[in-house]
Length: 99
Image 1 (cartoon, rainbow, N blue to C red):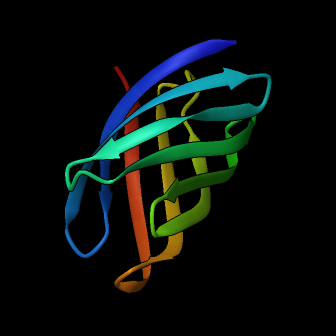
Image 2: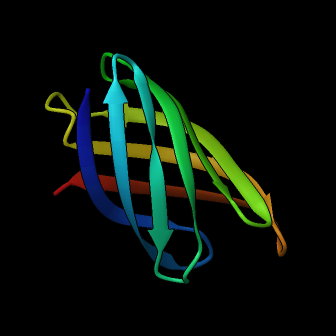
Image 3: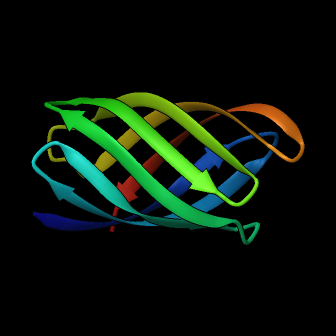
């Protein structure tokens, strides 16, 4: 099990900074996040090899899920998400990098 502190950005309708603390146990990811708008919540997902099979964000008033890729070192995740919040449906893409 390893703890991965990562930060990066997601592009919703605007570029939003996101900071996360993730724990990886085998193929499972769990953790928390906070973004530059003040939104905070939980992160969960699964990684198999270089494939992020599932990446989920849950927060008050909404959620998002998607998939993506990891680089060979596991230091960078690239994901595409879709979800909904109080403002309606959204899509987002982003890259988060190990600190």
